[in-house]
Length: 181
Image (tube, rainbow, N blue to C red; front, side, top):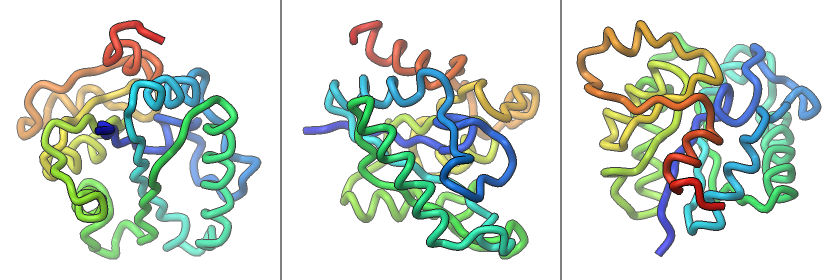
């Protein structure tokens, strides 16, 4: 049976550069797609959960976002990886929806779709809101320092407890897989 890993998108898989509004603007971080491929070779399913307020702000259409995600899927496949699912919150931050991280709505939706518990499932993010959402959903938050990580904010959040931190997605994969290819 395949195991699951949940990834944030911006700052974990691709460069954090404000709102990405076109496929050609989506640029993977060094080693991130190779890390996804390695995880897939070890029977992990990869799901991406991402806040995409550019849709709610009118900067990006859902069609354009889907094209960006098609690029991400294509580039991951070229490296030998597969992204099983992408869920996104299109809402403006002030909308108050339940799916926008730090709320756990996307995590609950993923668990329902996959008919699985998220207990113990690594959820890799680069921000406090990613970790809070993972924790609220019962997943195991993992921090990568390749994006917007404000380590002081994360340490100050007393609800999270100890959170494993890694330089980037490749370092997390190395740690999880024990250096095996």
